[in-house]
Length: 436
Image (cartoon, rainbow, N blue to C red; front, side, top):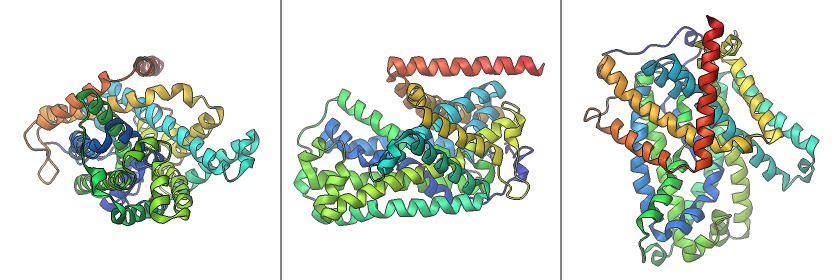
């Protein structure tokens, strides 16, 4: 029974993230801008049965995040999923996982968020349509978020907590007010979707839960990870499910068959019915704040994968530098934010975006397999750590779910994912040869 301790470099970081901060950030990273269109999209696919699809999908997602909970309480160094896979399968698998995680998933997603936020603000500030002001705004946004996270992990955590609270208040208000306006007849399932339609809807919802794992990237700064990780994961995933169910129930119960016809802005339509004319403006402000909060949460966690990979010798050593005063991986934070800004301004992330979904699925598969690998190699988790029941059953089921989702990728997504994985393998080979 082996506990995997932090490595040299992590001891310069400050462990300041508790269960509440971890759970709230997981909610923040998942409940982003997509939630404002998700109810309409899933209703068009499944009708009133969408609420049941959330429950089915949450059970599948729970299998994956139970694996994160066990291995995250066992491997406590920075890097999150990268660190788990690297500890289980070695440097080569770790390097590929790090590229898939910090670039294939986080950088591309955050570049898209930066563009979406700029576009939303531009509707009220038309100056941002012009190239130079638009680029200046993007650079300023990324630089500001980087600065907040460089000056201290506690500052970054507090910033995320405040942003998350601000973005959730309008959504929770909509749920609370909307429950009194629900027409129960609209929640009756008059027609059950066929199996292919239900599967397609579940696939959409699975990706709606993606992103929560990024909260664990800062695992080297989580206080008492043996207890904090499983509690934070449970808190975060429960909060995500309750918010999703609440919004879908209110949207379906208020709009009924009209929900499927409001795929572009279903929650804004609900807000206008429930809250009046000012409700649409409130939801617009909430959508802007939601994107901003998600972006701030990602810049808190994702650079830690870059830091961990550099610390382990996979990326240039300067990216593993820790600020002597603030005790934060400042070089990786600045590098990550600069890359986001560059991709957002150039628009090249759109061409690369096809790899994002496949990247996170391969990471999920790697984490699930890592649980099995560590149990076989090192024995069960030490006493006091979170341990999954029933041996290898849960990680095996998690592997099955993720493998099924990988099969559903489009040809373009599969080719893009294979290309990114091939490039990472080539980079690892070149790096190995240079070091020799």
